[in-house]
Image 1 (cartoon, one colour):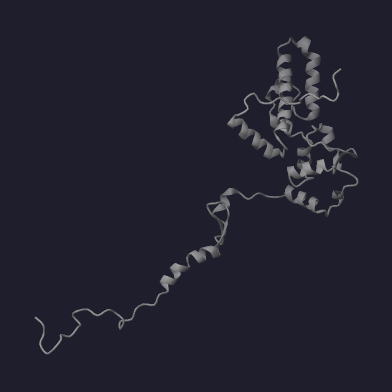
Image 2: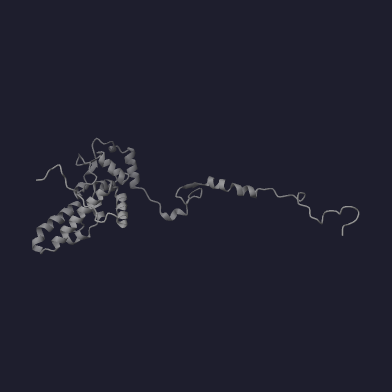
Length: 242
């Protein structure tokens, strides 16, 4: 038996440390599911790789030898709610999103108990979420299908009050309707976006257009103030100049 104080790594670091495509995918998943860092993502990715490797090894065996192990693997994934059909071939079709959807943090947000995924992580970490009355403080815990229905607020949590601001924000987030992008042209001209991504007020446009307005408001010169031409000037003396 090994030293209990020395725990092994529960994730595998990617082989290519610098990969632009992988960076973009990881950052997108971290932002979408409200993960803390890439280690959490790598941990779930390692679990998925283990499931897929077990499925490949079992498919290489005869049906009589793999029957018991196949049943255990498929039943485990069914309890987590990852597999839609209890078939070993479908294990190879699993994606990382299927695993991330079964996290406690994600389920709390899907049930409308938090305003966002980051808010759901905060509620779990601060001890506001309970399972069967027992407090759970691990956002990365994979919940089974039966456990997901028994998640609620803790007894001493202030969120049990329906008028709590966090509860109201969570209910608003659940019923919020996102405006389509096509409505950009229909925005009010008084407050439109400039090229730098900020807001621009119409008063600023009025100030910029003030000099042009002054030029238009210049008074028109009168006929008396018009310049005199040579034809209109009388000759000097009695004789006309030739």
